Length: 359
Image: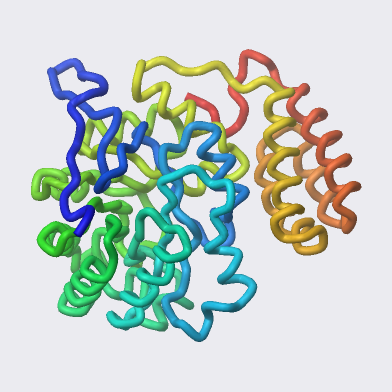
């Protein structure tokens, strides 16, 4: 089997007390060039967004969560989720479910469809997922977790990774036991969101559990939660010993955060804010890719939330967002979005970082 062990490379930066932090790692046979990853997000991390984030510095980008239920496999939504055309390797597909046999079959199916790495979702706190005893709800049943991990790892000849939370609740944090179990069953890398299931996204992500897990396992650990600025990415690595970080919501409308965070991790220096022309080019390319991927009608609708995120927090951005929400034609959306992003970015003081890029 491939991917039963992962090696962390001893390269990267050294902090002021002599600790060395890696700039690259291996997940199975894949050398990952960088330490800042895009977190899988339902309805967000489709192929156009993954490709854009990889282009702007994300070292790895997982798909949206794909249901393991074979009855859902041939829906349009499922087909789009597993579309990897033009996507750089390694291609990561995240699967979700609670039935070990279905999860194993889903892993095999997605590898046949082009997945280089299979990621298992045991971190999603959404009620509609947890009601099916999937996502982070699985953390309450460690025996079932063990069965799922074992059968999925044995089912495929590619690395299998796992994403979890610190536990079901504040009085039941079991990330340490799950992490050891994951390593013992052959999981190649672990991503840990520093909140419990019942916290959803409230409160602050806890670093103590991340640090404890890092000390307990030898496979790569990716820290997730509250990484909204480049300095926060390096701080998480320094305070927990995590080998990489995973950025989710902070990348919405600010996909350049990956190159900014990686630069700060590597050098301790901040990149200057992106130029308005670059922001316009990235955004319009993203919108056009959404139109091409989904078709003009659905593409316009999907693009609306991304436009809102690009404009969020910028002078006059809300007024432009409201105007753009009513646009139905793809060409009109592109032309008005170009006008909007030019207007709001050129009103920003060049000495002030663009929202999402602050230190």
